[in-house]
Length: 197
Image (cartoon, rainbow, N blue to C red):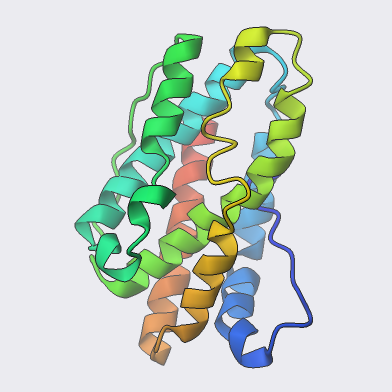
């Protein structure tokens, strides 16, 4: 089960891929560990799918709030379209779940935090497409209908537009270090939320 099955396109120019590849390499272990933890959920069952959504919301809600505090809308003018908190809350309401946002460590609200955190959140859309197919196999019609979060932004190209903007971001070496730290922290928040589910 995958949160963000980030694929590589060798046709992209090296300058487009540089920072993306360094982010991917620096977070690979955390990403793999999170995918392993997510494997505990059988998303075709109501109880497990609800727990998955509760764990996801526990991480997503505070991360999106932190992004807003950091000025994500100034970096991404389509932030309102990217934001998934309302979608996951609606799914949880349909399944009788409760969202309890985690407390985040103190963040430095800067552009590097925004890009590092969004690398994880936007990348997770790719894994969500796979999970959506799993949920569609559920025998429970309530589970099959609660797909606003997993289906959010499908067909819109939000991951690719994020990568395009990342490739144009004039990041210094210090900015890159901060982006990597922020991405690792975002993976850690999701891992902790899943561990507590």
